[in-house]
Length: 128
Image (cartoon, rainbow, N blue to C red; front, side, top):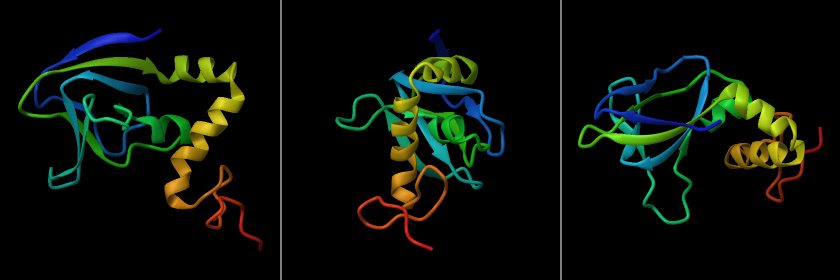
């Protein structure tokens, strides 16, 4: 299900506003998430300890359009493993508990539960 893809330096992966199609795992090189002025908001690399080299998880798991443009860093090519949204849905359809854990981890920094409700500091849904 994972497709290995070689992408040239500076090439766009997705554009802001696009409908999610794939989940990307960075195996070599780096990807940049950029704003409207093409300024890097973050860089995703596979050689940073304790940080998963994945992009596209928010749109794929939450069903929203991409909020930023993602492109290969201009200094080197990238090797990506690509999991289509359809294959991702099929995979996690067999493991709904893990899907909920991933979704909760994506929403936690925004202090939201899986239903979009604000949570308190303990991760519990706020009353009201």
